[in-house]
Each structure stands twice: as structure tokens, then as C-alpha cells.
Amino acid sequence: MKAGRTYFIKKARKLVIKVGSSLLLKEKEIDLPFVTELVDSIDKLLKEGRQVVLVSSGAIALGSKKVKGSHRFQNLKAIPSKQALASIGQIQLMDLYYRWFEKRGLIVGQVLLTAGDLSHRLAYLNARNTILTLLNLETIPIVNENDTVAVEEIKFGDNDTLSALVAGLIDADLLVILSDIEGLYTCDPKKNPRAELIPLVDRINREIEQMAQGTCVEGRVGGMQTKIEAAKVATRSGIPVIIGGGRGFLKRLFSTAQGGTLFLPAKDRLQAKKQWIAYGSKVKGKILVDEGAKEAILKKGGSLLPVGIKGVVGKFQPGDTVELVDFQGKEFARGIVYYSNQELEKLKGVHTQEIEKKLGYKYYDEVIHRDNLVII
Image 1: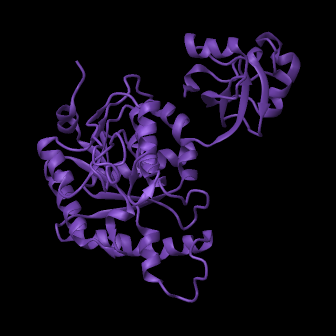
Image 2 (image 1 turned 135 degrees about the vertical axis):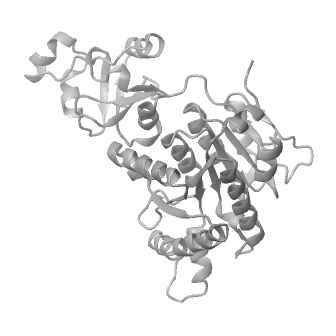
Image 3 (image 1 turned 90 degrees about the vertical axis):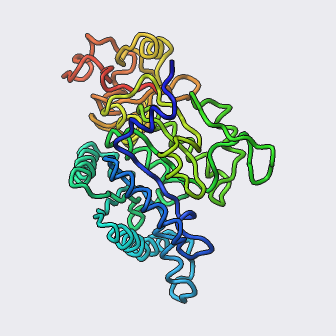
């Protein structure tokens, strides 16, 4: 029998809650009733003995509001302008949370992250230790993407993904992604009155992804798509996800276990290191493998040996993360390599006993050991 909504909500002691900028601002003004409701709900959760990490967008939007009409910002869509706006807005965002939580005797801590931070194993572990320490100090970590230095990361939906990565980072019991609609619908409820809310998703498949494509959320087409992608990351890490919103949603969710769409966690939860390999580390290249190697990895849980390699793409060094792709170019796994791209060019199709002869030395028999491989 599968565990249900009530089970996951009652069991959740360590929570990640994600808030988007469109929920914080209404008509370019801070939505104080929403902020008050959010803070009150988190306060109540803490009093129940739970721990909460808040992943919040809003810095760029608040910065834009502050400098609106300034002749100094000729192009607000340019990357440098967005970075500057984030710098201005981040102070306001934290001040907002600081003042509202302080009224309830609660302390907040700021954590700014980029995808680059999480792609390095040591930085990944340092971020984990910082957030867990803040939680143990009974404070509320408020996480945002460090948009003041990010470049390619500045795009809508990143904080959905960030919230999923943070949930995996700290081994959260539940990820709640707040939206401006109740959850995932069969189609866009703002356009079709016959749209039906889907209360439970056992597995995110192509049908679910297509439903998300047809749903507009937070004023942007594709908004639900990024939330579904985030749910895929979190559920693969063994973390249940609830997407939902509306007035009183958090209070209703944790008091009656009603509302939103629950995405069940995958049965084969990834270990912490493999979570990082799959979703946190930066991919540096690709290795093309033959069908025999693919079958050995997928069906037998084997390691990647040089004999199964047919091609190498990109530049990488030992310890980097690479994709494994088949002859159709489809990625089916990724892992940490023991050899560089230059070394692998010499080892393509070579049997294990011939490695030293080809290179003049040998690190390992395997190119990627099964303990460092993740099926995608």
C-alpha cells in the first residue's frame, strides 16, 4: 500500500518551501497579506517542532521597482542590469523577511548560491553544512540564487530547480513549491473551466509533462514546466513534492493535509553522492558507448570499461562529471571519470589488460566505476 498525503505531511520534519517573485509582488507592490500569511505559517510549523528552509525569488523584481524610471538603466533586460538590480533588490528582500520574522521572535540567515557553487563537491558540502547548522541554531535559512554574479542562471524557473537541489542537499522530508494556482491541472484552469486538479502523481511521465506545458502559472507560460522539472529532481532524490497555492494554502495543507498536487518520491532513492552527480555537478563532456556497454550498465549495474567506448566529446579531467550517450545521442547515465578526454581517445575499444600498454600507466581498470554512475 502506497503512503498517502497525510503520511508525508505528518512525517515531514525538515521542509523546503519555495516562493516565487510574482507571489511576493502584486502589481509591482509587495503583497503584505501574502508575506504575513507566509511568515505566520512558517512560525506555526516551527512551533510544531519542524525545520524550514525558505527558497525565495524576488530580488530582481524588487530592484526593478526601486530604480523604475531611472535614466541610468537604459536596458533593464541586459545581463549586467539584471545583476545590478539583483544586488539592489536582495537587500530589500532580506530586510522584508528580517523585519517580518523578527516580529515573531525568529532569526533568519541569508544563503546565496549559484549553480557553480553546487557543481563543485567541496562547495556543495560546505553549503549543506551551513544550512544544516542554521537549522540546528533554530533559525530560518533564506536561500536565493546569487543573481549578482550569475549569468546563464538568470532565467525564469531557476529557483524551482534550486529548491529541489536544496531539498536534496539537506535530505529534506518534503518540498513545497508555492504557485498562484492550486496545483497541476489537466489543462490551463485560467482558460478552461473544465480543467481538473490532479491531486496525486505517482510518476512523472510524458503525459504529466504535456499537461504542464499547457498550464500557465505565475503569469508566465511554461512556469508549471519548471516546477515539474524540479519535482522530477526532488522525487528522484526520494523527496515528496507538493505544488499548490492560493490564500491559506500552507495553513490548510499542514492542518488538514488538503490542497495542491502531491508527487510521490521514487522508490529507488539516489544516495547523497549520486544526487550530486545527477543534479548538482557540472557536466564537462560526453562519452559515446556501444550497445553492449549500455546494456551492462542499465541491466547489470556494471561499470564503464574502455572496451565499450566509441567516442569522446569535450575536454575533461579525472574527477569531472560526464554524460554517457548511446548511438542515438541520448543520454542514459552520467558519472565521474577516472581518465581525461585525451587519455580516453587512446583507450577507445581497448581491453582492460591493455590500458597500461596504451598509456604507459594505469589508474583503474574502470573508466567510471558503478559507485560513481547514475542512471538518468
